[in-house]
Length: 261
Image (cartoon, rainbow, N blue to C red; front, side):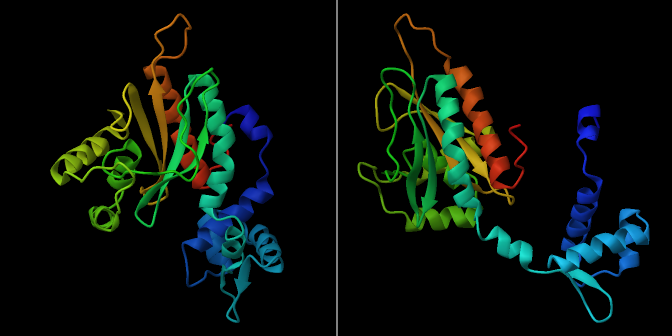
């Protein structure tokens, strides 16, 4: 641990969080002595922390003196569901990435087997290619669709394919070609493809993961290459920028709010 990290530690808070995390792994409850032993703390330290957590409603104490988590943390988490939190967090980070890359980007999710754009950020230049929020795009012919299909279980992917209704302009799915694309995406961890809906566009797409490793959203940059004298980031630079953005948003979605600091 660095000197800076050590300087800003909050030992009492850390002990409380240690207790909560320990109890989350023991649904039947633990005695005070078991908690103290597991955390290598004195029983007096643990007693004070447990008393506070019980008083605040985060921990329950049974008649036989076993401690377990209450539903308070679950109730608090439902005030700001992860997807809502992601949609609040993503736009300013997307705008920053778009500004640094000199490229537009958008965020897409799967909703009832449709692939839907839920947020976008425009390039800072005089021209850009940005999809409007609410746009429904294809599954088989877009990088967003391939990402959202690739990073889920095989059964969930098959269910997505079966329930999907083609978007405007989306061709009939070539199942063999689509599965080959999915295999490549799983191998690479992202998608990089020439757009199948517009000429001269290279789509860069990156999954945003939940705790189980499924893609719950995808960041897409429809990369436009400039051929004038303005020097802007290359496609490789854009790849680094938007891949980092996707990693950051995965951390935010999963509650690691210090990941971008």
